[in-house]
Amino acid sequence: MGDLIIRPGRAGDIAPLDALLARSYPRLLAKDYPPSVLVTAIPRIVKAQPKLVTCGTYFVALRDGVLLGGGGWTGGAPGTGVRGPSRLGHIRHFATDVDAVRQGVGRALMERVFETAVAAGVQSLACLSTRTAVPFYRGAGFRGDEEVEVQLDAGITFPAIRMSKVLC
Image (cartoon, rainbow, N blue to C red):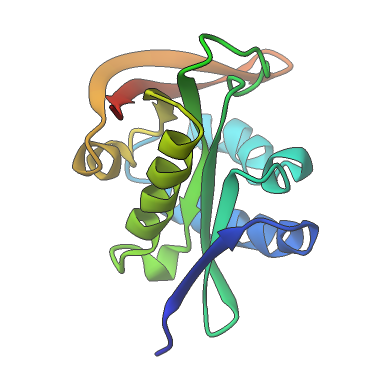
């Protein structure tokens, strides 16, 4: 098995990310969300956002040319793009292929996020985690457990956990 490569996302990564999200989210989230939530949310959260993927602070993980994960950060908040304090960054659309979970993919992506965010002067990161991903984020040093409802669209909401991490 080859080395894991982490690089900025490109337009050509959008279709493979869509496939990864569509394959992984239903299986990974099923233990923490009832079917009534997933049936409305999954179609809305399994699409990669082209502007996000190509923004320069969204990264993909590849091994032997196969895309195994993606995730990044932005200055603008998810769903609004509204920028808060200039030293605050927002974790964006992290996902690991369901068949590559617990193989260091998410950790490698998060390390690149921390490295680039600190280099950009970001002092803390905000995150809206799925219930499923809370242990991953806690392992990366994030704290918080406030459940919030994320507005997806057309009155559809998705339960998430608000978390944060001080970088420096």
